[in-house]
Image (cartoon, rainbow, N blue to C red; front, top):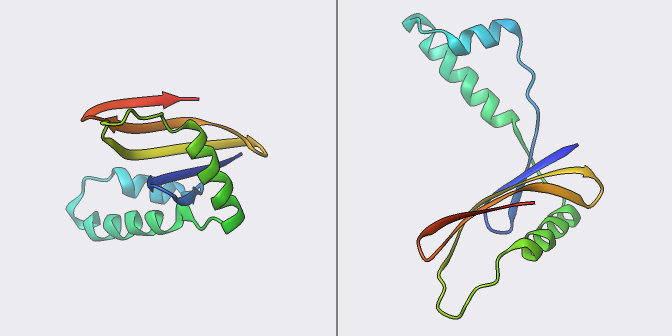
Amino acid sequence: MKNYQSTTENSWVELLKVELTNEQKELLISTDDSDKNAKTSLINLIKSQKEGNVKSTKNNELNNFYQSIKPELKEKDNYEFISVTLSEKEKGAFKGILNYRINGKHKQIRF
């Protein structure tokens, strides 16, 4: 199963699983001041490893799917995209959630 996320319309990243050692897990929950710098470095490392690039053909497929679930707007509606997260269990079969605002009201579509 692959997971994808967009926080900017039409821009996608693949969410990758980052495996942590027991030592790294313990560092993340540490409250010791002497671990502060190492903890910050580990958090930055995790952030750099958890997002992968999406090929242009997959990017187009994800954009097409997003357009198919995007709500239809009335003429005076103000649409604000927040994010969409997709899981692809089978090729082209997506599940996930779309977060957005219409006229300042937060809404979600689960599919």
